[in-house]
Amino acid sequence: MRIGELAARTGVSTRTLRYYEEKGLLRPGRTAAGYRVYGEEHVETVRRIRILLAAGLGTDVIGEILPCMVDEGEYLAPGCDDLVALLEAERRRIDDRIAELRDVRSALTGIIRAGKRLSAA
Amino acid sequence: MRIGELAARTGVSTRTLRYYEEKGLLRPGRTAAGYRVYGEEHVETVRRIRILLAAGLGTDVIGEILPCMVDEGEYLAPGCDDLVALLEAERRRIDDRIAELRDVRSALTGIIRAGKRLSAA
DNA sequence: GTTGACCTTCACACCGACGTCAGGCTTTAG
DNA sequence: CTAAAGCCTGACGTCGGTGTGAAGGTCAAC
Image (tube, rainbow over all chains, first blue to last red; front, side, top):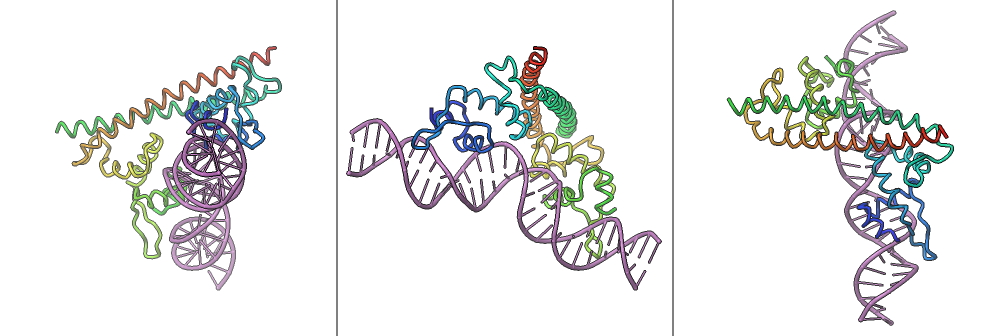
């Protein structure tokens, strides 16, 4: 499929898909005329990129991780052992962030309570 | 106190303090020579700014909220009723974000498990 | 054969919350 | 008095996009 279809199927703009390629995250084929050609597997790749971005990872790190994720993700590619430590560190970062958000949430709740006391007064 | 001391006491950079002023979040006095002069209350203000930023609010919104937070935060200033709805919306956004991070976390855990299976193999 | 949709590269601008550096003034310590 | 530390303004860089536009190539339908 070409870039427009992949954009439609993933919900990501063509601009962003070209950006991912520029960052080395996608490597589509090309037609004789220079059009980018994507396969079905790229739909899944884009989905993974979005997850990892949402996790707060940078495109450079994602560029290292992606080649390790093969098939259905049930195992990693060879030579990717080191990745586990990195991912565990990222997971800790996410845990920290969730904890922070919970703190912030309760602080916000405090302010809201203050506001309700005002309305009541 | 001057900017360096406030930075040391709050743990944010002087650059950041100047940025907050630029955005209207802090309004320090000035010495004759043009140095910024902060009071004790600014320490608390910076703490509040950090919480609200961590909550994902923008500086523009924070600029509206800050004047409503008076004294120890046990109540809001008059004329700030509308704020409650806004804050509740922000709290929902935080809930959504926490849920998203939990999804991402479990996705990451899946990859890590895949990596461990590889190491075991 | 021409219209129109789709694609190409290059490139500039914007966002938010700062980091960083340059060039110059003020205050403080020795 | 001088040197260092601290402060000032102004301006450019960062990251992960996103929008926009220019100037053109390609392809299918009519």
